[in-house]
Structure formats: structure tokens, C-alpha cells
Length: 412
Image (cartoon, rainbow, N blue to C red; front, side, top):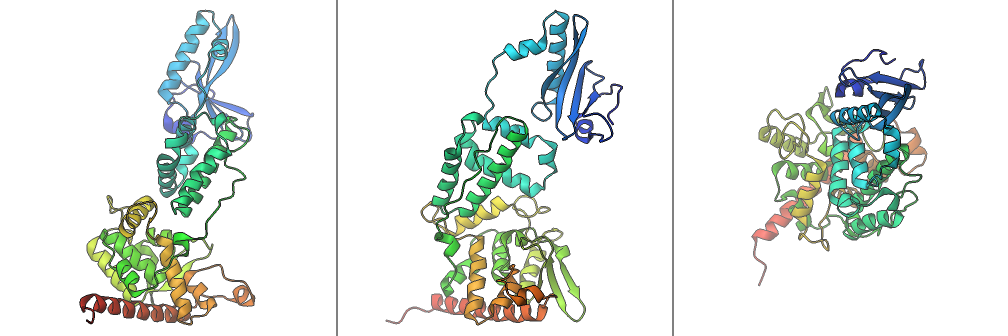
């Protein structure tokens, strides 16, 4: 339970403040630096700055702002002003109510949410992606608009624009992040409903999501992508394994283990399917690993960041490099994306006669149902190795044919 005596408030003390379930509904932590200033925490965990004062001998309390909406220094200054108003005989609460306030905008909400302890407790990856989505696609058009004036048409305009540009994955991400942001506004009682609710994306079903690298020349261009070494190596890794972008992007060396009588195995425990992705490391995969180890010695991640080798390559950076390296720079032809490589592996495995069950094993799909899916257990590394080696033989056969075609002049 919060202390009854005043102590100097600090940001870390406020962040560590927790509601005592055995105590009252509202609990307080008072500041020793500015008399009257305190932090109130409710049973829901909601925290706000408050100031207590006396007016004509009667004790009163006024809420200043949500913790995170303003800084501690700003809260102290507002508490001092409120105390001075009360000493002069003016009720600061009445003055606050009579003072017209600027409507809360989406940019204000974004600033409040990203200052919360909850947002800062999310993964670095989530924080970067959220901030990137807001900065690139949301705030330029809606940042200055009052929350109460934003409607579903405004949100739909953003996601539809991204879909028209062939960025269907980004449209899904933007809608998800807006739902998170508007949900925070509802928690703060700034909105009664979310403008991002009940919006169904009108996906085209065409474009990059249906595209796959079919010809030898397309595979050659992907394999020898003119990009930074970690991006090119990550493309090769996705092309060799069929893994999802973030499974490769966040891969680290601790996931590679040499098991007796089996050989090297790559294991990813945190996957979209909810079960580990376990793949044997083939010779071409080992060559990619050797290149990364030699290029970035000491880096903990297989594919380090473009500016910080101790961090994984950022999602936005990897996406941007891929778009700029594979398209013509226009919205009309944005180039293929990371999921294209997964489609490519799936399709080539099918053409090689690999069964759907074994394709699902390699790609770590949830499966296509049936008795086999429910009763299949174990890692089945032999089946995965057979499928991967057959696919790798096909890759290098096509790459060799493409290179020879480029070297030899056409017949006259």
C-alpha cells in the first residue's frame, strides 16, 4: 500500500507504484517536494496526478492530469499554481472547469499512450512498429484532428490507401495499431466507441500476396539481391526455409544447436502457429550462417540491424530495403515482399511432389485438418530434411541455368 508520509516523487517511483488489493479503492503517493501534489492510483491501475488544498478551511482535491500525459515537472508547476489560487481565495477546480480546453487530438492521444508504463513494457519490436505506423501512415492525415471528430470513414481511408498501394500487410498492421490506440482513449473516457471497430479490410487477393518467384531469372534476382549483406542473407534464409519474415528477422545464434546423431537444428519457439518451428540445418543454410558469422562476428542475431549490430534488423528497415530493391520505386509496382518467398517455397515444394502434410511440416503451418494433423507428433526431422534438400537442389539447378543463360549470347 502507498506510503501515508510524503516522499520525493520520481518517475521510477511512480512507475513502480502498484495498487494494494487489501487497501481502499483510491490510494495515494504524496510528494515531499511540492506540498499537496500526489499520485492517485485506482484499483484498475489507472494513475493520475492530483493536488490537495484547503479553501476557506475545507480540504479539497483536484485531478491535474493522467500520469504520462504530462511530465512530473509540469505536474509540480500546476500543483503550485493551484495552491496559490486557493490561498488567494479562488477555487482552482472551479477555474479549471470554466477555462475552455483545447480538444484532445489523435496526436495528443498518441503522445499519452506512448508515455504509459504499459506501452513501455511492450517489446522493443512492438514499440518500433507502432511508432513507425503512426509516423508514416496515420499522424500525417489524422494527427491534428480532434478525437471526437474521427469516424470510421477516416480510418477506412488510411487502410484502403495502403491496400491500393499493394501494402496489404501494412494495412492490417495499421488497423490493429489504431484499435489499440482508440482502446486506450476509451479507457481514458475520451471516446465511447472506437472508430476502428467493425471495419473489414477489402483485400484484393491479387498483387504481391499471389505472386511467387517462378522462373529461374526471378530466383536469380532474389538470390543475388543488390542490398546490404544482412538483408540479402535474410532473403536467402527465407528462400531456403520458407519461414516467416519475423522468424528469420529475430533469429539468434542460440537457436542453432548441434544435436548428436542428428546434426544442426534451428528451433524457433515463438511462432504464429503457436508451436515451435524446428528445421534441420542443411548445407546451403550452413553457408548462409558462415557468411553472417564472418561478416558480423560477435553479433547475437543472425541478421543484425543496419545501424546497430547488437540488435536484430528492424522490421521497417527490412521491408523498405526489400521494396526499394525489388520494385521500380512507384506505388504502381511496389515489388515483392517477404511473404512472397514463403509462397515461392510452398509452390515449388508442391511442384516437386512433396505432400501437403510434409509441406505443412516445413512451413510450420497449422495444417489442413484431418486425422493426420491431430495425431502427428514429434519433430519429424527426416521428412523435413528430405523436402528441404529436394527444394535446395531445385533452387541451385534453376540458378545455374539462369546464370548460364545470362553469360551465353542468344543464338542468331
